[in-house]
Image (cartoon, rainbow, N blue to C red; front, side, top):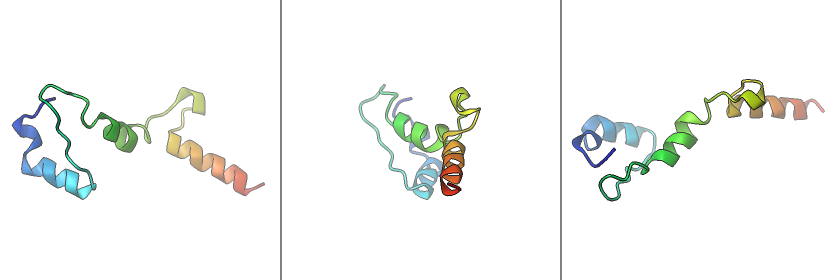
Length: 71
């Protein structure tokens, strides 16, 4: 992705504002600007892991905290 018009459109700016995100643009052609924000906020919490009995990280933590609370 680059600094094209799709990232300056009003609906994209509204989305960023609604989620308390800040648009970050470095030099043209750098596709990793918002990769960390996307992974941490949208992809990783929902992604199921084979190691965690096919649970997302959020669901796995909830399950662990339930177990700890019952001890």
